[in-house]
Image (cartoon, rainbow, N blue to C red):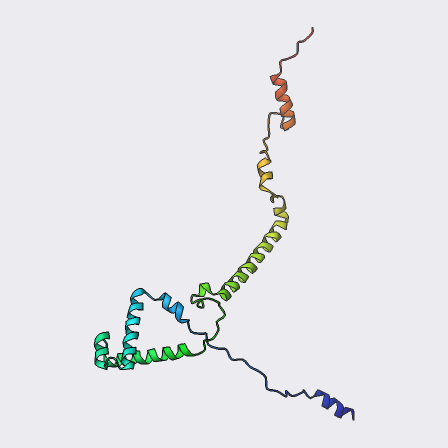
Length: 190
């Protein structure tokens, strides 16, 4: 009986529901307004002229030959532009996805991407902490303890050590000996 109860406990419970997995969505396309603002004036004028001509062609105001002559394009390219304009209009009428960045386009340069910049900052902070720790260890070494100056003011305040040497060898004896030589000799009684 104990064998049956232990074997029933060893069985792993099975999952009743399917595990939810989330697929990564492709990045949203650039919004129309920033795309229009990024274009040059010449490109804006050309796009406006092509758009009005294609609309006139769709409405039957001009023929295909007149549109080709006005835009100076071959028949195949006019048809491609017409299809591209229709696709853009239909895509513009769809419900647009919300972007994470409010009020503008997503950054296109990797240098401007906040995620990459955060990773770079974290790596640099880690490197700085390592270097600071190494400096602390090096300062604690016995050979460097005497050399470490706590502040630059103390280094400036210290006078250079000058030793006065004379024939006596000791700086103190040399100083007193110099004074005796410089002082007038006391009068001798005798």
